[in-house]
Length: 511
Image (cartoon, rainbow, N blue to C red; front, side, top):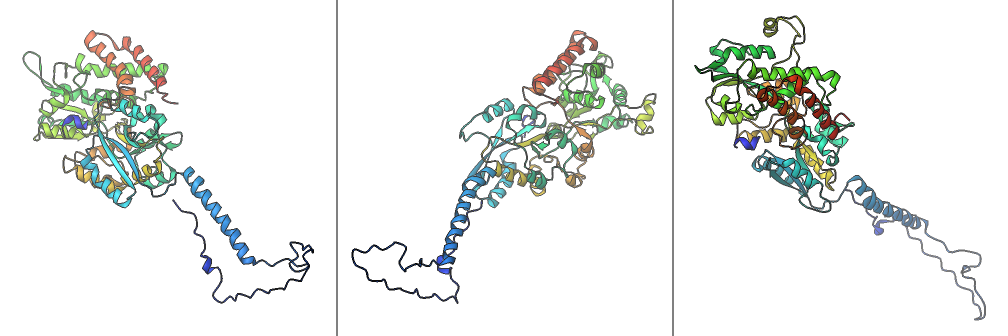
């Protein structure tokens, strides 16, 4: 893979008429009563076959026909009316269209084959999509009506896209929530992100978050420890930045300060906003000063500290080349770096945190002496699987989702993916975390998963909507104004807040 790739029951049977009498029952002969002779002119009452006596009827047989008729009618009602209302269906063949992203068909095919073997009436048509315009193409296809076979029954979206797909998200059935163990075995971030008005709207197959990558050789050579706070990161980055005689940066301390060449810069800002408690609906009275401070701090790595500049290559490239000490990225960048420089000696650590106690010396915060002096919030960014609320095959779709999210299926997917890259998608289940502890580059992600939160500043979702053209665009313009046009955080913050409010209203965030 190259870098861009990552980025119904039937009615009851009728009884056998031949078996309606027991073996020991004796069939009594019918008593024949001789008709009285009458003349041709005599009128005989229809009922008076025997004067004053009506003909006998066999009561058990009469009851049988009544009960059998009732059962037949009930069976017909259940089969024709009730079962369709409940989503039940016969064993007629069903094909589920599954729109995937990132994972190749070869990785998915093994579990798909196993599911189809166990459910021969259900076929899975897995389609791998290209990332560009995926969100808009998907929305357009879901909006189609009728019997278009190209409309997906199941599809992958980014967790931050739920507000944009509200009309097409089927609720996870209560029985599936229990089977999948969404309430009990998944990290808290999923409940916060994927539950809308009391119902889950999607299920995760993976977890990912923003982490601090670091060059072990550069850090060890300087005798420095990993920073715990943002201020510790700033101090260490300044010390480890190396410039040439012309003032150009030879080794950058940390990739922060710009938007053009800092991969995942929007995730960094989103993380800072979460740690500062900024609302995505941007309450001006409460959030203005916080956003202003975030903009100032982020840009000072270029404007003041000069540990980064806009002439450098992308942060991913510079880190892979061993010329960057600290670099922020999600887990899939590990694959990119390994391909670009297999010999790079690097590690993965939790992101810096924000001090919570006033008047505490930085050295005490960094050493850990000041217990509870830091926030513990991390930035989650991940993809989920959803079922089309307009699909006529929802019952089968959730059956497949239950199978796909089982521990056994997740393990098989991870193992298959590990044959073509360093590791598969990180497990979203808490009970499976320990099985990945031996992977020192994966373990740090799981160590912080219980404390992760997400938001609407996720990079590389290619959504042309809530993230890219919404929240991110306003912050991008603000940072570029500070860095390239000598604007101040005070002068750009109003536009940022207004843009956040407009975006929140457009996508009904917080409602």
